Length: 378
Image (tube, rainbow, N blue to C red; front, side, top):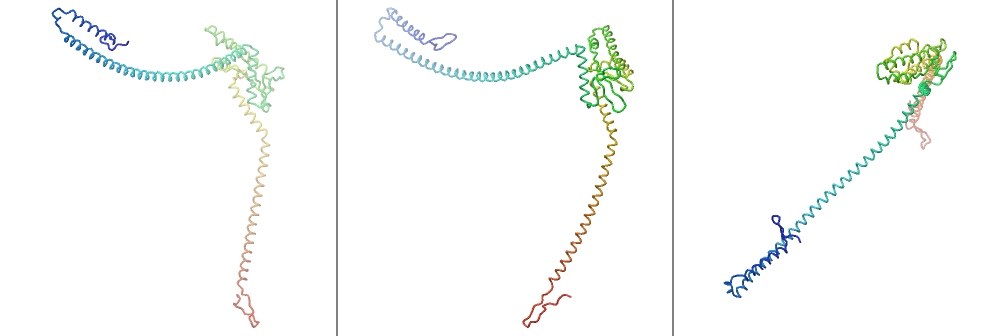
């Protein structure tokens, strides 16, 4: 049973309260029974009156207790309603918070899935790139494959910038040597020999050198390799009267080309002295552009007489057109004069017809004579 009230930490239920009241009444009765003999003279009426008063007090106390119980029930109902309202508000807030949290979690999960998809795609791309890098590393590690790759890169550049008639791959010279590419310059200038070389091993040792001694040794090896290639190209592919006075050494690596022009300028100068020009893919493209311009200029010079003839024919056609335009203008002028003459004749005819229309026609009278109404114009 729930307590009716509590005060200072002491709770009292309705049963406990009624038991206390009964004990008080029982104590009063016992007190009366155990009263001294001097009180035995109390009459029955006094006892009845006393018990009636006790009954009234008990009834009043029960009424108060009932009122107190009702008030407690009302307070309990209000408390329950307040608690229900508070619980509803808390439940609403918790539900809204849970809904918002779920929505944010769903959005975050969606974003996370999208990012994971991007990461997965990037990982696949990285794997593919790693595979390609591994293949490229394996390709560059093999000397023959590396040489073939450099030669193919050179051929692709030539095919992209020059017409097919302007070059020959794997051409055999008069001395029996085979050159990677031969570019045919116009006229009697000869053919430019181009050979692809890729001194990657010596350059790699130079890049990977950890101390000055290793770097010095690698530098000497790299310089010697490049000079050997320059001498071989000069000896094999520079033939007087057959090839152009300058040959080209094609380096398929921009890094090696930059290393040469930065730290090995003496090697580049020796190449110029030997009439061997070192080119990278970028500088080779510029050289091919220049060669194509020279070829076009030569073709224009070779076709100059045809151009002059065509210009002469064009000038004659323009002259004939001018003469015919003048003749047409003369015809137009003559036609204009003829039209003017026709208009003049037409006006004269019109004037004469007007005059004829103004003449009076003679009419016969009753006597048979002809009367003239008006005098004809003089």
